[in-house]
Image (cartoon, one colour):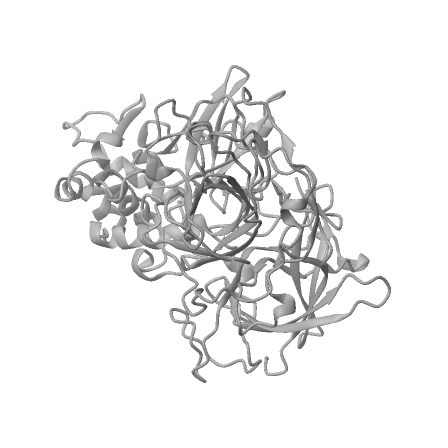
Length: 617
C-alpha cells in the first residue's frame, strides 16, 4: 500500500455498510411476502461473508441461496441488488419462488469469488453478477440467447414504463414485488380437470429455457406475460440495454498493482518494459467514467534498472515530474472504448513525461487487468493458459519499449445510485475546486478548476466557470468550448445523524493544456481504509446550500460522521518529485505477483476545497 501524507491509496475499502454501494447507508433489505427467506449470511456464526451485487439494472427482492458446512443462506437482494454468501460457498443460485414454495424460476448460478478488495461493501471480497455472469459468456464479444432472454425476463418485473429502453441506468431499480413474483405460477403446465395445485417444488423455468431462441422463449413465457399485462422487450432492446450496462459496471479508478516480466524479480507499483534493458514506469492511474470514457496519466523513468531491477537507490526516478504536455498527445481525444468482452477496441494512451505509453491489450473483468498468466489465473479461477489478448501489454513507440502491466480497480463506482437521494439534488451541480499545496501554516494557492457534476453521474470541467449547457456526448458546451472528463460520482449516501447528503467523488485531472499546470495530474480519491473523499450537500434554511469537500472517517456502523472535525479533502499530484520509491526484491519462486510498492511519497500535495459556482443555482 502506498501512503502519501497519511493518505493510504492502495487497496481501498469504502466501509459504507453491508447494505451495499447502491444508495444510502441506512438501506434495508427489500421486503417480500415469501416464506422462503430463512437466514442471512451474517446470521451464521463463525463464517466470513462475501458480498456482491446483482445488476441488470439493480435487482431488488431477488431470491438467492448459498452456503457452506456452517449453514445455508436463503435470502433476497436488498434495494441496491446486494447479496452476501459464506466465502466457501462455491456458487450462489438466483431464483424466483412463490409464497407457497411450490413454483420456482431458476435464473442460474454464479461462482462465489473472494477478492482482496471490497467495492464499498463492508464484508471481505466483492462479486458483481450480471446476466453475462449467469450465462457464462463474459469472454464473448456477442450476446447469447441466455443473457438476452434473462434480461428481457427481469424487465417484466420493472414497473417503470419502458425502463429497458429509456429509464436512467444510474437510478433505476427492478423491484420484484411479492404480487408479481406469484405470476410465475402461470408458467405451470395446464392442469388436468379437477387436479389439485402442486404441493412439491416444481422448477417451471430454468437455464435451458433461457437459452431458447427468441421466438421459442416468447412462446414459453407468454402465459406469464399475459398475466402480468406487460410488454416483453425484444432481444434487440435487451442487447442495447446490456451495452449500456458495460461502462457502469466497469467505472472506477484503476491503479497499477505492480508486476514482473520474465527477467525480473521485483515488486513495484508500476509497469515494466524491455528493449534490451528493463525499464520502469511508475504510478500509472486510469479512470473509466459511466459513459465509457477513459483517461489516465503516469510517470516513467526510461532508465535501465540493470539486470534483475534490484536497484534500491531511487536513482531511477530522480527526474520524474512532468514538464510539458507530450507533443503527440491529443487532448481533445482522451477517450477509449472497451468491447463487450472487456478488450480494448482501440489503443489507449497514458501520457508520460517522455511521450506516451500505448496500451493495446488487456481485459477489464473482475476489477482487474492482468499482466501475467499467474495473475490472470488467480483472478479468473482457471488453470488453462489465458489468451494473449487478455493480458495487459503496452508499447512506447518513441523508444521501442514493450512490456506488461497489471491494474486493479482501487475505487469502484456503484452501478446504481439511490434514486431517493440522487433525485433531490440540484443536478447539474457547478462547483469551483480550489487547490492548495502542503506548506504548513499558510498553504499556497496553486489554482482553481471549475467542474460540473452531471445527471449521468460523471464529472467534467467547466473551464470558463460559465455553467453553460453541455452536450454530454461530445463534451462541447453551448459556448462551443471543449470540456474534458475529470471524474465520477462513485456513490451517494446520507449521514445517519443529519439530513446531509454526501457524494463520493473520484477525480483525476488529465494532462491537458487547458488545465492549470500546477494542478494537472491531481487525483482525489480514497483517504485511508475507513474513509473517502466526499462532497457534503447540506440544505440550510431550505434555500441556501453548503458545499464542503472533505475526507472523514466513518463511524462504527459504516456511516459518515458529521463533519464537525472539518477534515479537508486531501490531494496529491502524481507528477510531483518522487523522493522515495522502494524497489523490493521478490523471490522468483513466489507465485503471488500482486504486491505493491512498499513506500512511495511525494513532495507535492495538499488540500482542495469546493464552493458553488457564482453562476450556479
